[in-house]
Image (cartoon, rainbow, N blue to C red):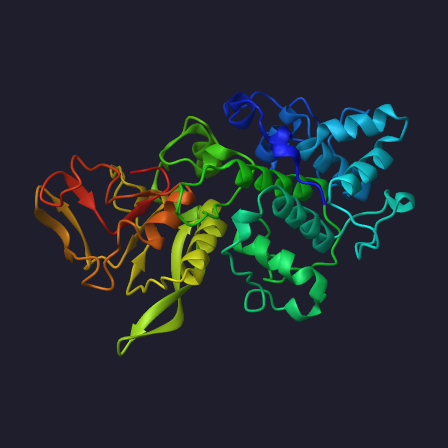
Amino acid sequence: MKAFHSLCALALTAALLCPNVAKAASPWPDLPDDHWAYGAITSALDRGILTGFNDGTIAPSGELTWGQYLVMLDRAFFPTFYANALSSGLPWDQGGYWAARDNGLLYDGDFLPVLPGNLSQPIQRRDAAILLYRAITNAAPERLANRVAVGAETFPDWDSLPLSYQTAVGQLYSLGIVKGRLDGSFDGSAVIQRADGVVLLMRVINFLEAPVEPGSPDPAPPWDGDPQLCELGENQAKYQLLFGSVSKRRFVNEAEAEAAMTEVEVPCWKLSSGEKVSSAMTLTIHAAVAEDVLAIFTEIYNDPEQFPFLDAGGYDWRGDKATGEHNCGTAIDLNWRQNYQVRSGKAQAGDHWLPGEDPYSIPADGSVVRIFKAHGWAWGGDAWAESSDAGSGYHDYMHFSYMGM
């Protein structure tokens, strides 16, 4: 099995990685700029991974074929091999097949149901997961070394997924790359759409390109195509996601805010007689970040630290003039008594912050802060601090916010 040759295709310019999110009108008639996968699709177009059809369409809701997906993967990870295959006279899809074979995405005697003669057949969700998992495994196996595949307790249809697929699906789920259907199932035999395939591929690319601090656990953010969605602080990409406009930063009134909220149930650990027990809690948050919030708490739950929660709060309309993000449904307060808000040494809310002594106090170097930040959420313990000393500056140790406020 060949390595991915130093990820030559991933060494692309920062301009392509972080395109300007102030969107012009889409040149593609079937890709409106409010399409749910617009960011991922335009990033793939900019990189040359995806191309449109001769009739000028993208067909985001069209079925994704084996040939199309193998060519996308070839263009992303080993474009030189794919170009050489085409220069030898192979058709575009056959070139994609053999470039994938030469670089370890497909094997001799592979269990995947693909051969040169059926590249026009649609690809299923479980088969796409195998290809993406092999891409990560071949490119950066160390990124998977300490990960625990999850799935059996996540997807109700897990037992119907063949064993040969379970490791790939479980690992990709733990990374936030593949997710379930609205009913919670994985639905591995379902045919995948072109937009879905692009989103999954861009999540893998952005995951592989994300820097990892030496000695720290590998983050698992929601790699949804636009890297700015995972950056700390506010930006136009987040405005577009939350408010449908790159220039809007807040809801106009409570009625507008209420209409954008949803409830999400997240897994968590609780303390019972000093022992950690599995539980769940419900948060009201902005619907646009509901899936992200579920992923964050799932990762915290699966982390070896098993940090416990006593209470949590999200959306809270605090008046028309409030500037914080609770009005937006993009702020979450956790264990508020044990993670106080303090200004110049004087508590404004809560009682204390004693990580290492109080099990509900959030450590600055613990899993909760690390995982929230990996998803682009700022922590009030250091986001606005004039000093790391709790005796000066302003700190809100309970507070996590998507736009940094």
